[in-house]
Length: 288
Image: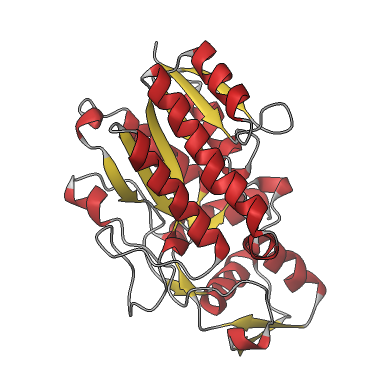
């Protein structure tokens, strides 16, 4: 049985991914506070002791505004921490799969990004995640970088957009939602299954490189909120379109964060569902 080491196992994606992988692999899942990827010696020792075939690196500082206000911490976690994991993989001969973001792009493209578009991040979060990508490529030849965006999931512990919109929609009669930022909503369950299926391919070791992996489609925040309301049956709250300029947030956001799963599709690996189908599954199973 192959051995898989997963960082960030207690996070939103990790909670969907770890149980799935335990059905077919010997899995070691780690997370804070016991295991800190910024502790170079500790992470190298722990990965080396487990001696995995594959390391799936999910651990990250994902608070976009928090990264902007504390860039040193963001760099320690997202860039240096990722380099520590990459070096640990190199030392024990493991393949690494690093989960990155659509925020490595500047958002100026008129439509969804593909893997061959040039990274040009505009905020600290995007820059430090891209620095992590550079570190992976620097130290390893056997690696995968999976870029994703607008993740939703987590069930009762969900603190992200979907759960917040449902909570606020049930409490208020009016919500202002931006209509000028676009992404590809991605369900943690679908993303976990896609990674599981990808790594289960007989020739997956011949497919090293970057892959976009998101729910299919491109939508703005307002349209996403309307779909959430429709599925959840929220009818007494008005959704009002506003510009993102109205919200003075520390970190700039790319206008387009949406991604196309171009490289996976080229391989005939159509692993992700339309975002609307996945969203309906999540909302109806969790909030209704």
